[in-house]
Length: 248
Image 1 (cartoon, rainbow, N blue to C red):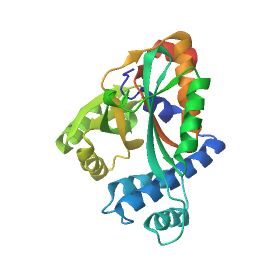
Image 2 (cartoon, rainbow, N blue to C red):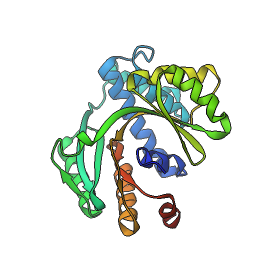
Image 3 (cartoon, one colour):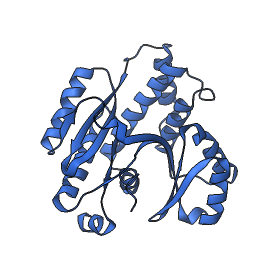
Image 4 (cartoon, rainbow, N blue to C red):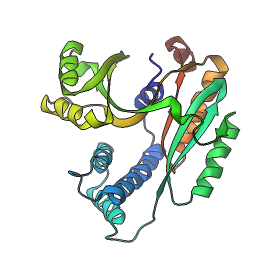
């Protein structure tokens, strides 16, 4: 398996429990509010908001919840003010980690993220320690049952995608953030529904981890993802397919 989107692939395959669905609601509502606060409440003019609203629809969030989250962001109704905070750290095996959060109390979130890292044999690092190891990219996943690889390749490359890779039962499409909407629109025009589509942070190189380190890294990623202030976790680990099968 390719390392660049390993965690995205693992998350994609996990079944959502009721508890995690509730956490997903909280995270997406925060993202909608923050996106509306940054660039306004019109999704046609705000790609970040449009993407968050699409994620909300995938998990069947009620329209009224989406609308209220937007209004809180634009100030039409009172609400909590969230700020973006990025934390950097290391996991066992020398794996670099970026933790993206939306929080109403940065000091509290800093302490809690540090605590999770320490409990799972990781460590917090200073600003700039790991961020340089990642590049922002668009990442779109499409099930292999939806289309043949050569047909998909033609569609996405013509739309501005950089690469297409086969990963298990899905295709992974990567592109520059500026081409993200164009690639998604090209898929929509061919009635191809992505399994997931996001602008994410992809590592420039990966670190192979095995055995107990692999299990500990995955446990740490899970623990960070479950924190309600955490929006996304990025890491540069690469766990071989045979090792993943042992762990699962």
